[in-house]
Image (tube, rainbow, N blue to C red; front, side):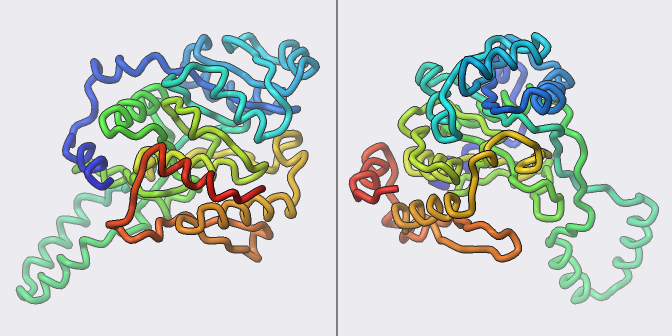
Length: 335
């Protein structure tokens, strides 16, 4: 599994324009429910800002009535409004079946209003020069201890800046998937620079491929339908993260990129039917079915049940592939 990430780290340089152009055939899929204004003001405006071609954009709605409202309320900055099925689980299951197997799909929610990259804010050169002169005069032993401390990141210098080029990021994600043999990539799920991995020009240390949460509102997938099947009404992006991990031996996350959304704060959307009981039921189910990959917890501050992802299997016992994925289904644990 680790060798997949090593392949990417050895590249060192960014993909070439020619390599990125090979990834141009992606589409953008946006599920939306009772949020015409939100989609218009947030995600569609963001895509226009980044000059994403409108012909790439597919909007998925619950029924014909919704389609009529979206058609009348949105600017014609999309390729198609597709009638799917009501409910977050159902629409998530519908979208990958709308596209062919192996299609490059970048999924976005309807309330994304900005994208950011975590960088290290460079210090004043004159200050850093004077500091280096002072450290030069110190003893060798002090130098050694100082240098070992400097290896630790100063998180106070980590800052968020707007992502320059969304199209390039999406293409880079699909390029890295094709190189590594994985099929799902995503971004850091919290828009807080302190917890993120800054962009590192010396390598790709902001990348991880262990089992980790790929948040659903900004994720790219080389369409693998068996991994896209949702069985839960909540935590469905946790379920997808687990399935792609088991199928491919890893999921790719860019811990230097994040998005700002209005999750659960806008009218309409998933919270129309969301309850604490339903969230708990989904979390309990996942923690039972994938007991060696998950831990169930309840956070008092958040008020909802949560799932923590970690592969608890011994490293030598870790197996991956379609058969392994299906073995978990054979456990017979019902939702």
